[in-house]
Structure formats: structure tokens, C-alpha cells
Length: 115
Image 1 (cartoon, rainbow, N blue to C red):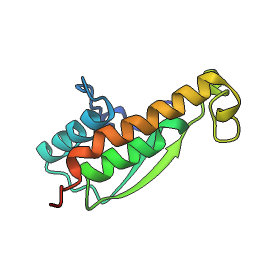
Image 2: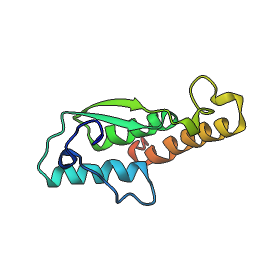
Image 3: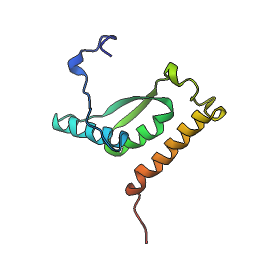
Image 4: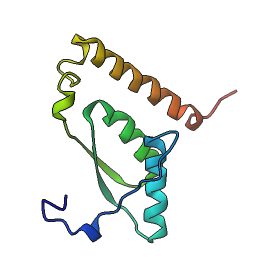
């Protein structure tokens, strides 16, 4: 972002995520913006394409009143795992199935149990 002309002081970085990765990133980011007194109306989430759904779900949970835009960035090293070909190789299938599993695990606690 700095190479594109954005002032480094305008970039907030959350770097304390641990066990639950994306979930922690989202809620730690919320803590950072809340501590600064910022109201985030719109945010852009940049992430790996296969990870976009979990990112959106996590940040939507942490920032319930924020308009979130997802901007997946395909990396050269991950060309074998995109929406056109992930199902053609075992690495792609494993990566996508792992993401689906994580989406379910992350949000079990968010879904109320109706008895």
C-alpha cells in the first residue's frame, strides 16, 4: 500500500491473532479501531481467494454495522487453487474443504441453540 502512495501512518495493522487466526484478526482489528475511537462505515478486506468467505464471515461478525467489500488477491504460488480449478487437484480440494470446515467451526458459537 505504501508503494501505491498511501501514507504508512494511515495504515492500521493488527498482528496479535493466535489460535483462531481470521476470527482473532477480525476481533483484534475491532479492538484496535474501537481503541482509536474510529467508526468504520466501509472497509475493504484483502485476502487470498480461497479464504474470502471466512474473512467476510469473521469481519461481518466483528463489524456488524460496516459495509464490507472483499478484494481477493491471487498469488502466483496459489494458481492451482482458484475458483476455476480448485477441484482439479488434491491440494486445491484439500484447501477448499479445510476452509469449509473452518467456516463451520468458527460460527457454531454464533448460532443460537433453539430448544
